[in-house]
Every structure is written in C-alpha cells, then in structure tokens.
Length: 244
Image (cartoon, rainbow, N blue to C red; front, top):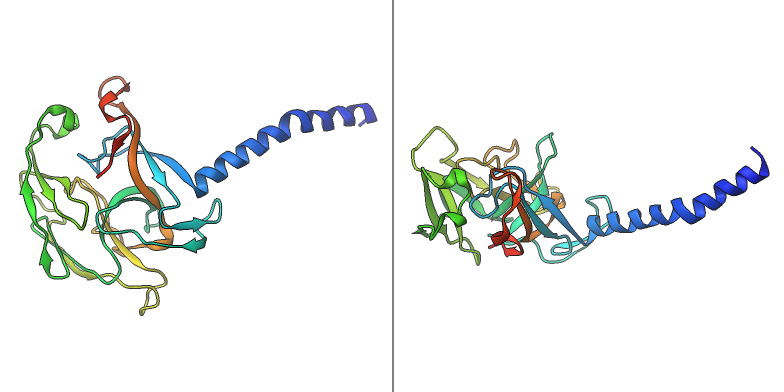
C-alpha cells in the first residue's frame, strides 16, 4: 500500500466512516438504555394492543442497565401489578414479549374459569360493551366476551372467547418468590396477555415466572399503528394512544 493510498483511507475513515459509526453507537445505546419502541406482531394483548402497533418503552422505569445487556447499574421501583411491560421470554426461544404484570414477588396466583385470584382474593370484573368497532381489531368483533378487570391501580379491558375450551382457564396456585428466597436468583413476576384465551404467557412458560433482570421496560403508549388487515394503512385513532 502506497503512502498516498494510506492517507486516502485514513481521510475517508475520519471524514465519513467514523462519524456514522459514532452516530449509530449513540443511537443504539440510547435505545438499549433509555427508551425504545417495540413492534407488536401478535394479538396476545388485544383489545389493549393491536397487531401493527408500535409502542413506546420506557427503559428507565425500573432501573438503569448497561447498554446492550440486561446487567443493572442501578435499580429503583419494580414493576407493579397491572403495568404493561416488555421482557425476554424465560423459555429457550428468548423472544421479546409484551404482557401485563399480574403477579409481583410474594403473590400467590390462581386462575379459575378464566378469572384471576391473587393471594386468595378474586379480582372484580365488570361487564363491558365496546362503543364502536373502532375499539376492536377485526377478528375480535364477534365471538368474544369483554370484561373490565380491576387489577391494582390499572383497571383494563380483557377479552375471552365466549365458548369454553381446553386451555389454561384453570391454573395454580403458584407462589412468586422474592430475590434470595430458596431457588430464586431474582424477584419473580407473573405475566398474562389481555387476550386471555390466545396468549402464551406465564401459564405456559416452563418456569411460570419472569425474573426481574429479563424485564426491559414499561410500555406506556402507542406511537403509531399500521392495520395489517387494511393494506398496512395507518390507524390514525391509535397514534399516541395511552396504554392502560
């Protein structure tokens, strides 16, 4: 390599390649540590979250992580019952999932005929009738039973298929542990989807719980949404829609 060629390579690196790499590093570090968005490809959280929603994830809600890892540099408040979180599946597939926190460390979780029982107390459920089809994905406009589930400080709409079927409508009791208890390396959380009969969640995970270090952040809002059933056109009514 001639000195002239070497100088050209160094010049190209400094003027073009290095600034782009620095920009990419800053951008990806920000998404990894502070805030991110998450594409939702499945309907396990309907009618709260639709397929095609892009949701905002606050990664500082529960602590500060080292970029690109699940290692915590600092921790503060933990996930609360009823909050929607993004986390890595505890199963070997390690998929990134979006579910609602149903149980926190120390809770005993049961499901009877699709209804939640926490620490021996059944949750309250109110009947709910959607005011318009715009509130529902196309495939939930028939054949579903909707209820308002009073979970902690987060009452929300959940959906069940009208007809009973052989699924995990009955589960538990299952006790969640605090970090340091026998067999617990981390605080344990129980997750469920709002689309109760169509959600792979803690009822189906091999170990039935999600460790705190696998929780990436708190999902708070839909940024924008594309309708997969309508040529991927935007769902304008869901832009910046708050998640309850």
